[in-house]
Each structure stands twice: as structure tokens, then as C-alpha cells.
Image 1 (cartoon, helix red, strand yellow):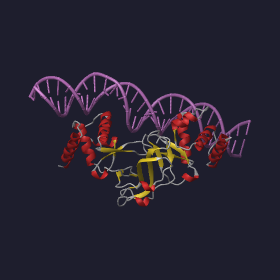
Image 2 (cartoon, rainbow over the protein chains, first blue to last red; image 1 turned 90 degrees about the vertical axis):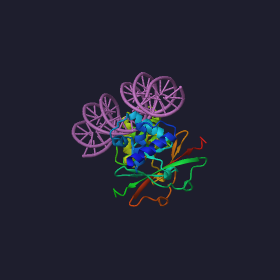
Image 3 (cartoon, rainbow over the protein chains, first blue to last red; image 1 turned 90 degrees about the horizontal axis):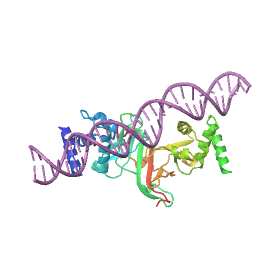
Amino acid sequence: MMLNTYRDTAEELIRKEGGRATGIRVRILALLLAQEQAVTHREIEARLTGLQPDRVTLYRVLQWLADKGLIHKITSDDRVWRFHVNHDAYMHQHAHFKCTRCAKVVCLDELPSRRHLTLPAGYQFQSMELTVKGLCAQCV
Amino acid sequence: MMLNTYRDTAEELIRKEGGRATGIRVRILALLLAQEQAVTHREIEARLTGLQPDRVTLYRVLQWLADKGLIHKITSDDRVWRFHVNHDAYMHQHAHFKCTRCAKVVCLDELPSRRHLTLPAGYQFQSMELTVKGLCAQCV
DNA sequence: CAATTCGTGCAACTTTGTTGCGTAAACAGA
DNA sequence: TCTGTTTACGCAACAAAGTTGCACGAATTG
């Protein structure tokens, strides 16, 4: 069954990072592994059927997973973090797309080269965060 | 005196939008006209010497100015809006730079062409928000 | 200068996220 | 499988940013 596979993968990933594979951590990471799009704290809460961890615990688990590099946080203009698993394809820097109608957020494959950017004199590049806005296929 | 010029310009811009040129609005817009970098709600509050409008009023004035297109809001990863005047040069879409050390935010001139982006099939582009992170000249 | 419209201030509320601390659960070793 | 230690969880309280409703007051219009 697919759900078990996600849980097994989740547990394995968590242990590989030296953390305890608690029920909550495993369920949250398994859930994230199963999501195509980036999800908010609230959405995760709603989808964790039969398990209602404390808000604080959820925040801490998400922070821990992000610190370990298993997931990444996405900034948005609605002041809400969204989380997405770091699949191999997304381990490098990449852009995000946010649908202006349904608020869905997905990861895009690439990021424009930094050579297309000119910074003021003396400024030093570190990274870039790019969010493309528009309509997703379902909302067009 | 320079400050007067900013206030005069501010008043003119506000009237042109059909709004009442109240002391608060004029002072806030004049302050924004004088800023090179994008400023937060808090920073504006701190710099409005001799005038302490209610938090709510400040939010409402900033929202009004943004609605009228006189200023623009900038999203940041610290969940705080920053505001910057829409100089002619910034009326088009542009990128922002945020210093990872002093948190300063400035507007950059350009934005990479959307041709460098490939969206999933059926997705429709509307706009992009790009924040470059790094060190500003003072923090390098 | 009166009437009306629009802006402001106050209070209360909402949302999102954080901190401290005691308790409970996971893992390691016997 | 028991026991001890370490780590994670839950609760309560807090904090920051921003919003809403409503009554009052100040700008403009005529």
C-alpha cells in the first residue's frame, strides 16, 4: 500500500538524520512526501487524520525537518510558510509558482541564471528567491 | 529646504489621486519619497518625529497609497511588509535585494526575462517576484 | 459657515509563529 | 524486557504583524 511506503521512506530518512522516528515525525514527513504541491501548516494539520499534534509540535517538527534538509520552507506574500519535500530534483535552488486564484504553490524546475542580474557596485550575491504568479492549469 | 519639497510633492500626488491631503498622509508619503530603501511599518513609525499616528492609521495609509499605485509593498521572508515609493524607474516590474546581514531592502532595476522560465503545461504567467539575497556594500 | 464625506483613533480581535517548562515517549544498554 | 537517559511532546503563555468595527473629528464642497 502506497501510504506504508511513504511512512517507511519517512522513517528511514529521519533515522538517517539521527533523529527519533516518532509517530508524529513519520506521519508528517510521509504526508509531505505524498504531496505534489507545497502545503501550509494548516493544511498539514487538516490532513493528519486521526492524529492531532499540538500546533507547537507541528511547527517544531517542520523546523527540524527543514534544518535537516529533508524539506524546505517557501516564503509567500500571505505571510504563511509553505513546506515541500526536498526531492532530488529540488535539492538545488529552484523557483516557485503560486496560483493567484487557488493559492496553490508548486516547485518549478529551474531558476534563471544569476548572470541576468546586475547588482549595485559592491553588492555580493548569495541566493535568490523567485516566485512566479499566475494561473495553474486547473484555474485557467 | 528638501523636506518641504518632499511634502509638497507628496501633497500633490495625493490630491492627484483624489484623496484628502491630511497631515499624516503627506508626512508618510514625504518620508517614503525621501527613502532610498524599502522601509517597514515600524521604521516609518520610528522616523515620523513629532507625529505618532495610530498603528491602524499607518497601516491604512500605507494600504491606500499602495492601492493608488503611489507606493508598492514588498514581501519578505521575515513576514514583514516593506514599502517603497513607485519612482518612475520602478513603475515596471523589478526585483528586490535583501541584505542577509543588515536586512536592508533595496529595489533593483531589472527582472530576468520570463522567457528564461518554463512553466508546467497549461499554466499561465502573470507576474514574478524576485528577491536576491546577499550582502550590501556596507556589509560585505 | 454648514453639511457631508472621508480619515483617524481606540479597543478588541485574528493569525502566525515562538518560548519555557514539566512530562512522556523513544532508544540504548544491561 | 526492563531501566536509565536523552529527546520529543503538550500545555500555557507570550509575541509580532496585521485587521475589523465603530464613534468621533477634521477636510473638502457648496
